[in-house]
Length: 190
Image (cartoon, rainbow, N blue to C red; front, side, top):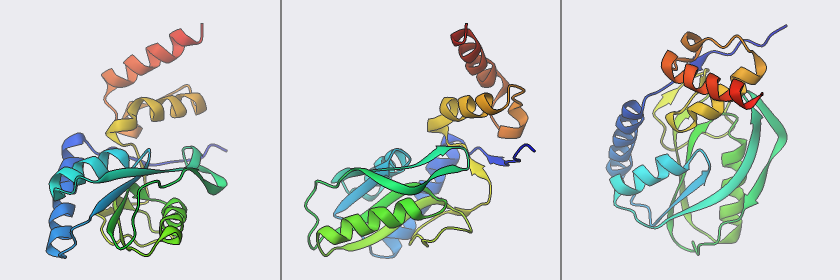
């Protein structure tokens, strides 16, 4: 039996509007982070945009790997890049694209706070109902698999590998983009 996954594909403009809205919420909350920590890879772009919007220029990363495929994870997330920035007594905004299971955010938070005492808040664009973490700031709750604009080719490839009858309308990707990716995939297999 084939697994049915519903997709949501926000545009760059939608993402930017969500981040503008979120930055306004953070500022209205009187939370001015000293450091923004992006969870790699999903948190990189939202963290960079929030860094600009919040005028918080101390930006760093923490590496966590959890997802193996669409809706498929390891048993537990693993830390692949430790935090190397001093954080003691700082206000920290931990950023990822989505709180899906919340386990990556949970591991990142535990790792960050075990180093030093800090005031930590969590920011994501999306939150899933099953997340074990409730982000302090998020813009939308969804049950769908989100295809972010910074991972179109990667996700299209994963879908193609599972189902050679790739249908762009189910993913929200444009037909021209899917054709371009599919040509690359099929040419690479010969």
